[in-house]
Length: 374
Image (cartoon, rainbow, N blue to C red; front, side, top):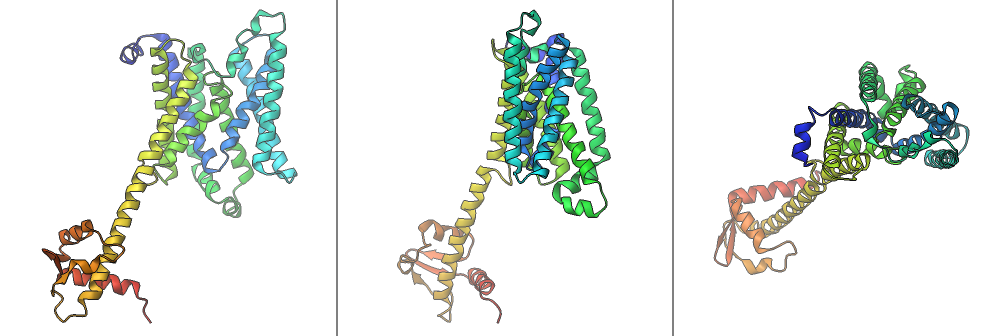
């Protein structure tokens, strides 16, 4: 199946439509909530929570003995919330830094989860087959009820986001100021964290424990390159996440033996790479172009000022001077002379140059800007 055929079938084929819609919704909610994790400098939080959810999945299976998605997701949610509150407790009750607490919980919970999975695999119960798919996800297992659940959670999340938008925005940029205004910063912080945990748990079935943090952070990181406005960043992150889900699913469906989750994450990484290079304000390409332009402008100004120093010693500024007297000047090049002539700041006549009135005025203004008033 080609990608073109995929998009032709996506509206008629139940399986393709379900998977595509599921990954799109998951990408949108992940990007939207990931924006807050990125801006709060808690990027590793998503990784820690996703790994902390693994033992919850295993314990839920051991208790029930079935692979009911809702039960396993509930176990993941409980385990993820426990891991989150442990992280908060370590940070507030000890002298350990945030990154240390995140690393401890990540490794502890993931190690415990892998131990439980190994134990489950050795049990004489056919139901345990495929439980390890939660490590890397399996989007093909998505059914309509899973997508409906994602849509409901996304709608609730969007409603809460709009309801507490002002509080979330203030908390992101100045927690102390938020507290002085009388807002309950602890409640707001827990609310944001809860929805981040919820989004991660929703994505475990599709993307998996290992890669879910990438889907949470990549769209937000890409969106951050394009804007300084929170509302625009959240919107762009949701769009990037949704498109990552759609195109990742399309590429995966067009190839044999290509897992959807990793491809979705790779597409999100392409959005990040593109944003890092081509975004107008922070992009590497435009930043390099601005740097070169500024350096070129500086060379022009230095050359013009040097000429100004020569021309102002004569009563007639249009007095011709030999080009060779500029050869020892560090900023001088033939291209610089051509650009100065194009700006009508100097006139060239063979091997001689003369400053125009416009060029003399421009150089005088530059000189006055650099000389402080006494």
